[in-house]
Image 1: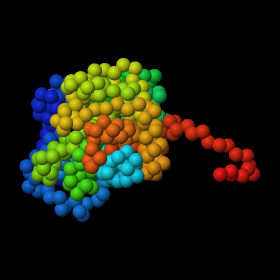
Image 2: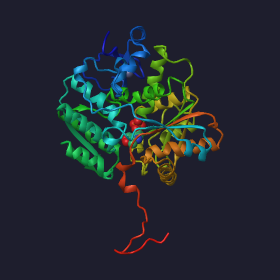
Image 3: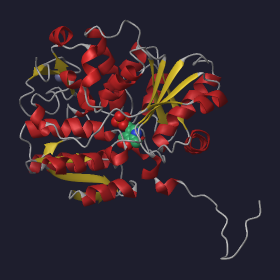
Image 4: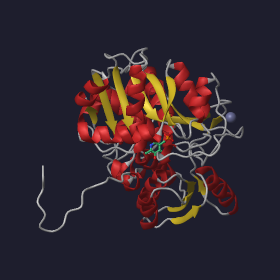
Length: 403
Ligand SMILES: Cc1ncc(COP(=O)(O)O)c(C=O)c1O
Ligand SMILES: [Zn+2]
């Protein structure tokens, strides 16, 4: 019995194979590498029953995660976040089986910690000492924290307008941190030059092959939490779309090891109307997106004008008869408030897009009232204090409430 059944890396485009025991970034053709496992051996050696005795962290799926030696795991206890049934909000929308995969309760408060836990663990296993990356904030925060725990240095560039909390997390974790008056794509160009000049490992989204493996565990967990029953629809707030690519990949692996059957959920990529390259591509039936000019939305994590893995997101959407839909900032804020006031859950604006999308797709008849619908909330609302500006009555000392 092996701890991991990782076999190699494979290019998502030209299928060229690479050694996972060496440091790798993109394929020589310029496209992302995906981790492959010996799934026949996994099917023979790994049974669902084994999960009963395992810790409630994402490492419970270690057979299909890329870390070969358990000793290399860098953990802050990430994973097995709640799958919350939303009866009251579901009723208000018209959905009978509405669930929230809630990533609020995870180190650093966003699902980025899944990618960071697995990415940093693999970096440690490969002997990497310096990691560099551009970020919209949350990924940088998670990578900075996990890397510090592993004794690995980080160099991070983020837009000046990124939220303050992840910036502080990077700073306090001891990152070599820089701000740029631009977008994540501008931060990426700076990092791109730096990794060539200094000996830094480029951990930009999808240039680093392993974070996707951490993110796929959201899908594995949802299925385990539903006792391996396949939901009808999964809605995901897509920036780079890595979480969606990961969840789809994880479900295909579960099919190959025989834990689930033919049926897959329909995947919905949800974006902001202020930055919707994937939605535009899907509406035009294209397999790749165009760069989105002047991207702007309060859902900072999904402000990605052109994603390296756009074709993989679109593939998951097309292959599952899913769709892509854009949500305005006003709609996000409204749903964020509704979820807090109806269900008592304070989610991030990115997560709120999936609630708004569920409502819209139900109203259009695309989602049926009986469908089992999973909205993915990728982070906790308290990471975004800037976007809530309530008008609250001020009192003088000694005043009385008038109800
Ligand atoms: C809270 C949040 N949700 C969603 C995303 C989008 O992530 P992905 O690359 O998986 O599309 C991000 C990325 O920064 C994020 O911070
Ligand atoms: Zn290739």
